[in-house]
Length: 559
Image (cartoon, rainbow, N blue to C red; front, top):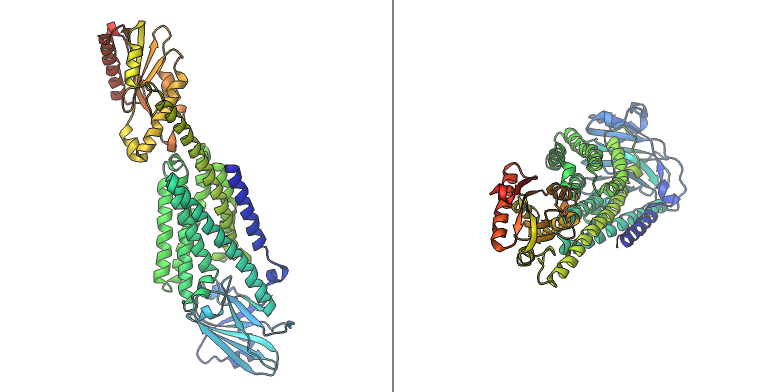
């Protein structure tokens, strides 16, 4: 099963890579333009600024100007061979209004603009805003943007490019293939995991579906597809949604990891730290969505910093999983390698430490696609283990029910059969009574089905250590008994060691207390006396702290 799932998802990854790799035309996407910036002041006009380019700052990073209103001047436009109208594309950023002024070779200045509310009419995939330059007999020689209400978190006029109709088409086709493949993969994984969840009821499965849906919402919002589907959506509101979806994706990844790994991986301070990181991330994203543009730079730093904290926690989680010998470490390490690198590049870009790059901006999507596929393989592996354990338990249960003298749950002797074979044995016999500690808490934690799995596992632990001639039975709910000839003996410590070494269902930590006593078993009264003696020793073991054994010695001495 696991091999087939791995093969299927590697095929999906290859298809996604093929869809993502752009053609040469799409990779170029157009001709990049350098720009210069000046803060807007009363009395400034497009004509005067075109005539006086020396007023612009061409060296300082755009982020250094802070928020507000600006004029942004392009370099002289290069000559571009095109059979149709040219388009100027810029990356979508937080701004209220943009007016583009175009200077033509004959001195004519024409203009076209849009607001945040009308951005959807010009939005392309990749969250690029495209404006077609108006037709004019003379060639366009320079561009001038008048930007109002720029938050300037990622830039004022970001990644401007002059593109032909063919370059625009190639870009749309390549990105549509990427986002389409990602969306299809996400929906398939959601259906796959929900179907399995109905049968297996593992808590990490709906958490994984939540993660996938958050990633899908982030892909729709950050790619600009949401703005294309709903052109009336305010572009600043789309950015709010994208921030919430990004934070939701990061938080749901951590939430999924909490449920997927064994609880011991998050023991100590790591559990509260991840909880605090998730709360901080969602709180900061919600604050950004509700309060922006008020203190938008502070809100953005808070949100990106919270996500960065979650990223830092990931290698710590993996290290903890390694120390705890988690069964799922290798799969998570492979799945998280690419997303951590991509998220790190995005974080450095968000803080302006590295230059803008279109493909780095979209690397999160590809990285999360890899993570989703690898995590799905990890889930398949986890389900494979659970199914294997359940299949073994069901086989044991079916076989036990075929034997009238057996306990149907564990396959051990039942109380009636145990007593019928024990009473009348010749010579001194040692009775060992084992009782699982805090079994009620086990049932309350993982349910009665999980509790049954624990009982089966303990029965298996008993079988591995008792001599072949011993009688082993389940004589009560979580109480087990072993009768063995006193000359052979059975060290209770071996039983405890076997229990500690066995892998319990759902990775629960389960202990037992044991009481032993030795005496004759010729008749029923001998059994009652021997049982009372061993039961007192069991009570002493529990009173001493549980997870230990007490030996009452020979019955004659204990009486």
